[in-house]
Image (cartoon, rainbow, N blue to C red; front, top):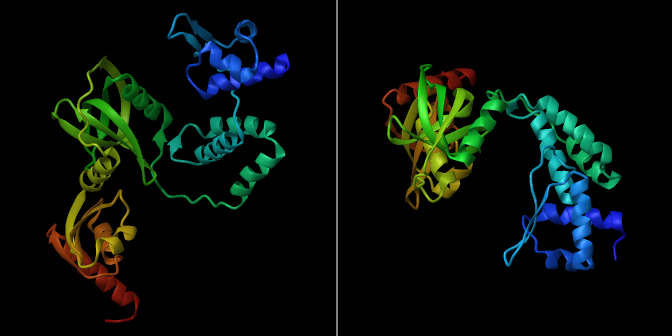
Length: 318
C-alpha cells in the first residue's frame, strides 16, 4: 500500500491520465478503501487541485481546470516529448513564443532525471537548425484562430492575398493545418459561400463573433483536401503538367504543399503545381528528372526556356 504522500502523487497522476474515474476504479488502483479515497481527494482540493465529484450511477471523479495551472506529472516519454517540443518552439515558425518556450524548457530540464536529460541533450547537440526564410506566424493570431475553431465562433480578419491586396474576411473556421513550415486555416467563407484556405501569416486582427452551427466538412480526408487546396489556390501561378513517369517515382520529389499528383496510367501522371513565380514552377518541374508536357499556363514554356538557357550557359554550353 502506498504511503499518503506517494499515494496522493499516484492519485494525481491517474487524474491526469484519464478524464473520468469512478470511485471504485481509483480505490482499486490505489489499493485503498473508498473512505480513504474521499480523504485523499479532499487533500488534493486543499492543495488547490479542482477535483469534481458527481453522485449516482454515472458519477465519479474528474480533475477540472482551476484558476492556476497545477503541477503536471509526466512519464519518461511524455517528458522527453515536451522537452523536444519546447526546443523546437524556441526556434520554430510561431513568433512571440521563443522566450516563453526557453523559460519553460529551463524549468523542465532542471527537474529532468539525468537519464532523460541526456536523451534530450543528445538530440539538441546533434541537430542543426536551418533558417528556412518562412514567414513567422504571430502566436496570438494562431491561438485566437484555434480558439474560434474549438468554440465554433465566426471570425473576421484582415487578409493579404498573394497579389498584395488586403480585404476583410468573414469566415466560419474549421481546422488549422501545419504544412511545410507554414500554417493554414480551412474555413467556410461567409461572403463567398464556399470553402477557402488562408495562410495564417497573412491573417491580421482576428476578431471572434457569434457562434455557428458546423457545416458538413468538404471531405472525409481533410489533410488531403487541404494539401490539394494549398497546392492549387494560395499561389500566384498554377500549372498543369503531364509527367511521363509512374506516380510512385514522382511522388517523393513533389512536396504536398507545392503540387498534387493524379495517376493517368501506369507510366504517367498529372502534376498540378503552384508557386509565387513562374521561375519557381520551372525549377520544380525541371528538377523532376523525367520527361514532361506543359498544358498551362501558356507563359511556362518561356520560363522553362529561360531557365534552360541559364543552366546551359552556366555549364559552358552554348
